[in-house]
Length: 393
Image 1 (cartoon, rainbow, N blue to C red):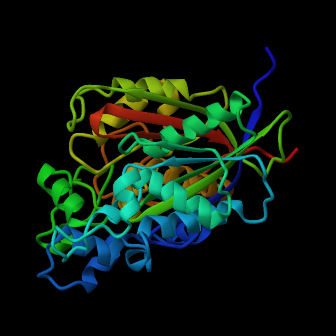
Image 2 (cartoon, rainbow, N blue to C red):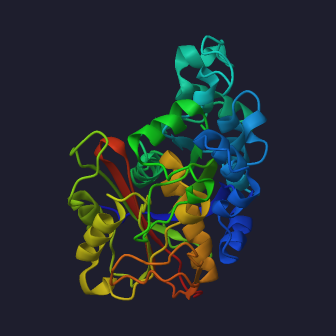
């Protein structure tokens, strides 16, 4: 068999509540900024999780974008990832938990019988609608398109699918795009009733504190991310991170609840491990009571002695939970973190979970090496990926 091609992460794109690009978001993270910092500016009588999310964790302008805020954000990150390239054989891979779902829903304060904003979305669905409009805006109308949905593991599952396309020779390049833009009561009130959102009364309690004993749930946000993957027969330029491994799995324990033992997380961590020394691990870390400690325990089991002193980072404490987009958002952030060799602080950590992993709230210098990323979602969906940044030749 011929050797596997090298899969390069050629370019990335990112929009978060903390910045409209990867580096601006990373700068905000280095400064210790979080969406919770904005709570102090809100009136105490605001208790709606939707209203709080719009005020603290929306991406500027997306709420008012036409025809759907998901399309506006997806286009922005896709253009960032394609800037300066001239790729012809491009596959588009979308990994979203909802797609352009607001096309089907009335505005927050409109009657439920209000017609959808995009009638076609009711016919072809929010994922196909997002793909169709995004291809038109990017002027790639004939690009083969793949839509992957796997709850909160959607975007890393899409990355896995894209890698398989390149490894098989089906494609030479793939643009993986994810977006979460559904700050609507249909979803926020549902998460609140499920008990996975942080409390909103008092308002200052609505903060996500993953990996801390004080965690009470996650907060919502709008986010989008994109990664351009390219296939190479020989090692590409060292400035391109190499996508090492990806894996997907399911853990059908319960539709909504987390399992008491994260066996699938342990297996996925082992599956994306390589012989390269480890630099950083990015757990899913939702900030819910039943997730973080059990997830860390599974990661520690998979890494064994190498877990001791290994830095970990949980981005949801800073930007909120981007749901189906969280894995790829973390991947883009990890590429910048790896290039800067610096893990941002985690200022929400006051009483960290006991772990051999390095969880402190201060910035941490990093070495070059392997980054491992994990994501999991309702229904037992799970995915993982690893990549490395190399030294110059």
